[in-house]
Image (cartoon, rainbow, N blue to C red):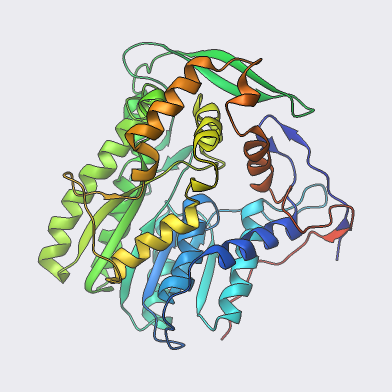
Length: 404
C-alpha cells in the first residue's frame, strides 16, 4: 500500500492532491455535528437515491440522511481513483469514509462511481433498487454540479458557463497568493453569447433530474408517496448578476420549473411530490469557481461567526421535513427554504456594508479569512483539526464494495 507525506499544493482554489486522513476526519466530524434522531431499526429505514453524494450539499445529504432518517439505498458520484503520481480526488476518500460510517451504523448503502448523466448509470441504479432494495424507492436527492453533460438521447455534449446575461459584470472578488496572503480584486466577466444560456441550462437545469424520474417511474420503482428534491441556491443581491440573474440562474429557474412539472405528474401517479430546496451559502468546490462568491462567503462568516449554518445542519432540517418529523415549509413558489438565516435583512445589510468597504488593506478586519482559507483547504482534506499532517498516509484507498 502506497504511503506518502502529503502537503497542500494548489493553483488558486484548486488543489493537486487530497489527504485521505483529513477527508476521513472531516466526514467523521460531520457525523458528530449532525443532530441525533430517534433510532430507526436496522433494515427499516427508507430507501434513498442521492445523486452527487461525495461533495458539498450532496455529501451533507448523505450523512444527515444516515443519521436523521436511517436511510439505506444508493449513492452516486463521479470521482477519480488514485494513481502513481496523484492521490484520488477528495470525494473518493470522503465516499470511503462515509461507507465506513454507514457500515458501522448498520445501514445498507451502495456507492456507485460513474457518469450520472448516462443511461448506463440509470439502468445500474434501477437494477439495484429492484434486486437489493425491494423494488421501491422512497426519496431521490439531486445534487449535481458539472461543467458539461452529454445527452444520452442525442449524443450531444453541452458545456455550462458562468456568465451574466445582457451585459458584462464587474465585481469584487477574493484571491490568495501562494503564501495565503489575501487580495481583493475587481474582475470583469463578459456577457453570455450565442447559445451560452441554452448550453448551461442543458447541463445544470432540470433535464437530467427529469430523466432520472422518468426512467425510475418507467421501471415501476417509485414508492407510494415518493418525494424528490433538487438542491439549489439563490444567494445575495451582491452576487445576483453573476449567479441568480446569470446563466447559472437561468439553469436554476429551469430546475424550479421542472420541479413543478414533476410534482404534478408524481401527485397523479404515486401521490408524491417534487420540490427544490434552496440552501444557504457554504464553501464548496463549485462555489469557489464563481467570481465574488469567495469574498461574499468570507464576509458572511465575518458577520455571522458561529451562527453560519453548516450544510449538514441544513440537510438535517431537510430530512426532517421530508420524513414528516418537521412541517414541510414552502415559500410562495413551492420551494423549501433553508437559507432564511443568510438572507435575513439585518445580515444582508451588514454584509453589504462590509462589501462596500472591502479592499486588500481592509479585508482582514471585515471577513473571517482564517476560516475561509481553512475551509478551502478542508475541501481537499487539509487543515482538518486533529490530523497529523507530518505522518505518511496510505493513498490507495479502495472504492467501497457493498456487502453481500
